[in-house]
Image (cartoon, rainbow, N blue to C red; front, side, top):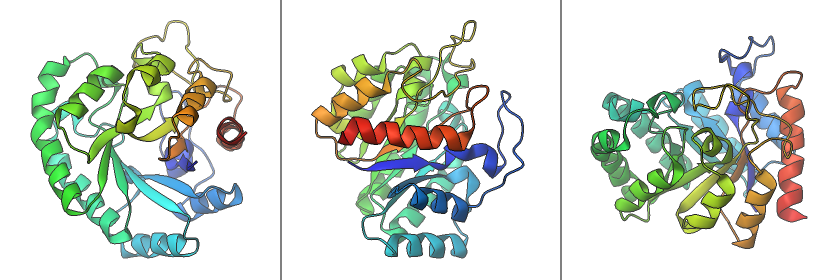
Length: 283
């Protein structure tokens, strides 16, 4: 099993705060994040592109060296946070996505995750957004095909999961699949366990493991869905991981924290989450 962690788990350390958080005095670069991964025996890292410059030669050099130091390591860029293509209203963002696809190819990476929008787009009908997104995704797929790479579209609390999966399948491309986020699925009213029982798991290229708590009065996708210690929230990550294990899932299974619940810290939850995922997948 490919167990990983995403840089968004430590977004405050990279200078980003949500309205539910206060700024962190601790600051990280990618170097500190990679050191955290190594300390916790993590071989797969996914890197939020909003914290990176795709044309920085020092970034490419550092990531090449990290991969070269251990042939079992993997990287994937997770492009588009916070709002990707804004549900199709921001096609100019394609240039930046293509830059990271070029960098992915230079590093020999297998896939790149993208987001199409976020929770603020959820109220706009999919039938209005999908036609706007069609030429954007088509262009990405053209380059991904040239580079022999895959594109994983995350359910970013912007669509019901089955609706998004049907759209992905409509392209009829082996290069296009889903990055399935457990926590984001319940934000839009889905049950992640039932989703995994319904959809074609072969069309899931990456999984983001998140356990969040449903807060009274915050049931909308735009509400507060804090990350809690894994196994204590409402996303049922244990059962989801068991389903993936039973299917022999071979693609990255990545820990991603959102804003952590009151009284918890990112490092504390991340270490617990890694142990939880390992236990569920490896026994």
